[in-house]
Length: 346
Ligand code: DOR
Ligand code: ZN
Image (cartoon, rainbow, N blue to C red):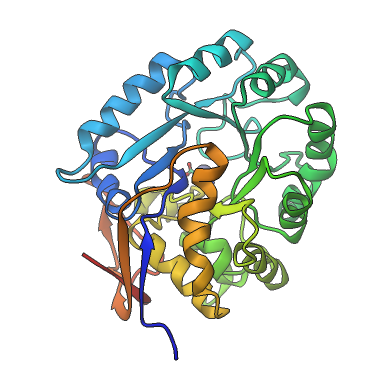
């Protein structure tokens, strides 16, 4: 019989953009309602590059957590060419910084301070390997000669293979994978090389950007890929392989910043995140594997205890609003105006 109600150990979001100030206050309740913890991306303006900044940002997030929620932000540092092994030792000792995020310079939103040449970070990678601090990779090249749809595969060939060879013990997460090449790389690597998967890359292919006209709300980075890649990602997510875990990459931008001559990359999914993953797993008859993907694999990878409480989902369609408030500015959530098949029971 088809499953219509599902109780899961409370999931965690291993890749989340919470922003700051009014936008933080507006979006955080969506994540806190669903997830126990989240790995919080450091790409603020200016980026979070020191433990002191991470601690201060963590306090601002905690101050915005709704009453009654035990949501816990897990902080990250933004890797720059000025990051040193001493920063890494301090981050590890802090107890509040759980990873370091690599952005190729200029790759995406607030990535201007990112790294231009990975070779400049070798001493830092040595330190991360020694301290067991995971490196979170925005795995794309920014070489303008490379086709935008090939940027992940080329990153794997040009950089990731060498990084694995030179730092064989470095814990890594290939974030928001979008291709079969990404899924294969992680499946073949040891257990301490993981990947996060977003709801949009499991549910949409690149046609979504162009169907019925150009849709800036389907634009994120790495960009959506063709259907065969989506199917490979869905197979990886539902395979039961503990290297694959939930990371929404929910990334709020004001409506006007997306509906623009130069629209920002990012899809907001926090308002329906676990519900959308349930749809994806349901579409291939693998709801039985949702809990491990959403609630166990990431915690195990990061060496953190699994959550103890639960959430319940019901198969009951509901309509996503056309627009939501991002703290005094409107934003357009994933599936705006359309239905989501699963409902989070309070
Ligand atoms: O689509 C994206 N949005 N990809 C990223 O890598 C960054 C994110 C953001 O911060 O908006
Ligand atoms: Zn992201």
